[in-house]
Length: 171
Image (cartoon, rainbow, N blue to C red; front, side, top):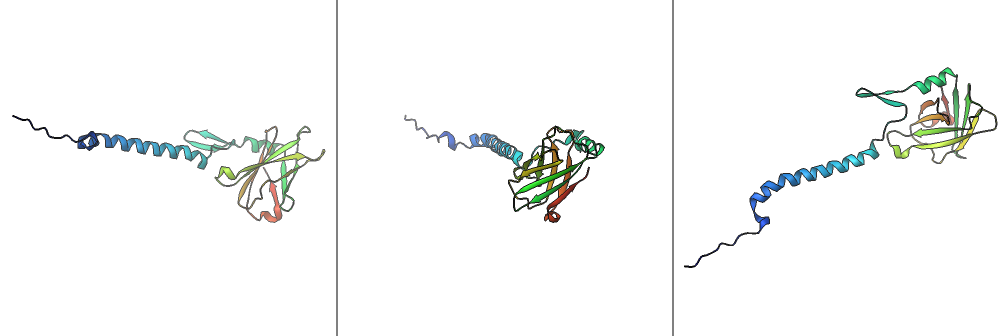
């Protein structure tokens, strides 16, 4: 008597193998896709500014720096000159004598990659600060003046054409 052996198909052609492995493969694929989206989301949704703080499940704006500016009577006028690329800030109020630099943070919407900082240096003993703009500002922006000591700051939203390129900061 001869025994006839039936040929067995290879392992990858077995239906029960794919029935067991397909949910595992699908879960791993979806997991890696979600991981790549989560990593890429950091570029789209940047972390909060320094003036925001967590309050329970929400976020509130920390106004202590604005309150310090109001208590000291600090206000400012920003003049943007697109031809020369100069930014000039005239500050009024009680400033420290040792203050030599103010940073002008320009925030453009929710896209953190378009934000930039302009360093403004003090002109002599005056309450004027001067600096160079790297980029021209052509869209709605939030301007924040922050001194090097950081105990006060002023914030102002502005829309183009910036009313002859003059922006007034009031606490």
